[in-house]
Image (cartoon, rainbow, N blue to C red; front, top):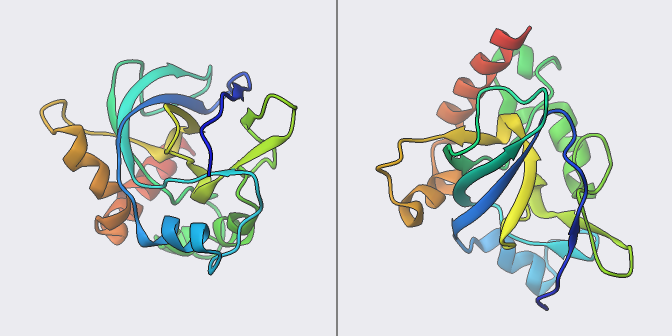
Length: 174
């Protein structure tokens, strides 16, 4: 593991730039470090985090600059068999694209100084100071919730409830 300066790509229309204020270390991160869970390298680990929205893409919905957010590791397409049945945790695109450690469009949002793309664990990569995620992954929370507690909801929270709330947001977009 190393700490390096990276270059962030310009935000895509539904991207959100989040300044990470707290992140938890989960067994999944440890499994990648130990090699028992294989992901492409180089990669930014971290998939339970909370922070502040710094910037939003032109078409981002449901979140605005300055919002305090918990980050969800489960983006979803909103139209596959499982998403249509209010089970976005089983989204076919999420399950298919997850092992690539890149956003659904296949384009890395961060690059090393030598130009190599950086993958993001579970579509987040929240062990950086900032991360770029899709708007549906940035879930606004009340500003009174401390970041060090809010970040734990991102992974350890009840995924079924979060998934249902997100799928409702997606239906509102259609």
